[in-house]
Length: 278
Ligand code: COA
Image (cartoon, rainbow, N blue to C red):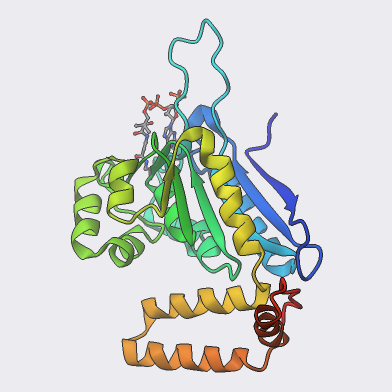
């Protein structure tokens, strides 16, 4: 049986500090358009805990496995999908007490709370809980044939993986309401236009564009990039005057790090910085 979730590790050549890796997390349930079932959710949560503990992990990429090449007798080959949502078959007959338990410790917050940079590399459907996985990542790269939506309304539900909140903050209140109440599936070019997707590319270019971005992030000081993520995240929680103070404190604290001295001197000496990570 193929694994429903797997992790590949790519070495970051010449990383500083040495030993940097990029983790690629692949959800592989192509027969169900990579829908998130219990096992996949548990595997992702474990991967989050392990990645956070592993100081070598510089970037996490999340992707959905591509469907297998269809055999000649297959009438309806499966379409490509990032993740087509939570596995709807796990919702039947479930009441609030049970679902509350499952959602208390959920995969979307686990990804969101990673201090490491995260990239959603999207080819195909990113719907419901799948669009929320993408929203829990820091950066979204999508192919032109991808599509996005929160169709939970059609199931008598609303998004439960942070979609109502993260969409409103990313796109604004009006667009979020339109998506959540209408449940429509929007194409990638529209998702790009409204800022749901950071970068758009052709399917053949997705891997190289994703890896290019990941390698760029992996080339930064692993300490400074976490501070950068934390500071921008603070803007979601704080009024602007408090946020500015927060940024100021973080900026000043970086002046006590080795990596600030390394970065500044490398610039002045026209050298590549050899970060220490602190
Ligand atoms: N949960 C469980 N199974 C799902 C799924 C999900 N979220 N999304 C797709 N699947 C399954 C289908 O049941 C089907 O399984 P089967 O071949 O065993 O019958 C298989 O994946 C392929 O999907 P299918 O609907 O036949 O493909 P399609 O190309 O006709 O339509 C979608 C694609 C994405 C439009 C359609 O599958 C869909 O609407 N999925 C649900 C999206 C959703 O509501 N997500 C939010 C959930 S919270």
